[in-house]
Image (cartoon, rainbow over the protein chains, first blue to last red):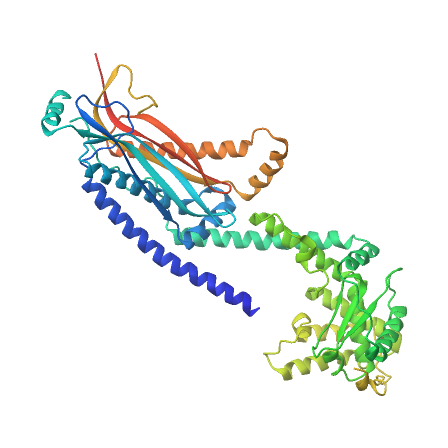
Length: 163
Length: 278
Length: 107
């Protein structure tokens, strides 16, 4: 009897701690994502394959991230799974992972002085934990081709010709 | 290049706006209600299905799990004495044909006695030591025998198995060693109404054998007093599985009044040397 | 809103590229459906409950992508890609993304 109630208190305690820390970290992560996204808005990324006219160097750029979901959200997902339908507690996990992966890709492209990233693709892998009943974390890879203007002179030339 | 822009899409399109705590509380309470209701339904249907199992089948199921141990010669005297009371009660309790009760004495200082599958009754030294007379002992045995007669162990086992498998299926676990996990050969929990039915059936058996309710009705008063004396932190298994509340004692007295059972004769004392047999 | 998995729209030209837009949806089927499906799995054939589940999911993901495109004032989404990943047992995520653009008719 006392063993069972101890376990219950342990689970409830863990849920509360996981919720508080998990939602705090999520909020912080979103703030950082939004800030960095605004900073990188000068570098567009599209999944089209046709390059604008001009001379560019091409280089593969990528960014990946593995983010895990907190215990509270995992527990909530189990409750969701009982009824079926949308599992809202995993939405932020996937949203954060995709945006973070794209940001890291863009940061890599920025370092190479790219002007544009073409043909962006995402690859998502869920990393299963335990018996495979619950998700532990998810890895997202974003990759694309960065177009780096061959020289400053060429780049300005391109800007006028694509008008 | 000038045609390339990178505006920021609106926030919160790919995520839900419901607060996770609100969602949690909503889902959790609905699941609790669903589980409680379905556990009740599973239990009811499991108990009903199990009660359809013939008694002979029940005996062979119970033999699969545990064979009763051989009797220790040191406790032959108490074993013989218990068996003599049981056979006296068997003759007076209208047991169905083919139903045989096996009594097992356990020399452990535990205040406990229980009936389980296959007509086995276990009684512990701790409980025998506090009984005042033979009629109380007979009442205790008759109560457990009545459980067997009314098929309570198989019904309780059926209920356990049905609830466990049903809930597991609902929650999505599917593999399990059914019988092993339900704990077939251990103490089963009977419902309040099962206990009351066994009290009534047992008392009638004892009355037929001894022609008096003296001692029999005292059993629960005695046990109640001990449990009160031990205080609220009393954890002996017998009291936790046999709630000795006022209502149960009152119900038993009602049976005595309704069937006008007499208490003219004195209760029969325990045989001499009883304490040494234990 | 034009949605296509072509790189360009015939008869129209791109006047503005507006970056990536995306939509996603994670769904699980409920316990009862799971049980029925495991029985159906014995005999093979279409698991209609799963087909429906994924279709619902896809519609929601598309709708979210559309909302993102509207919020950046696009009038078309080009080169749309779907990807499906199974997140947990019995739950799947549908993810759809494309490039938001403004198109203009050419004479």
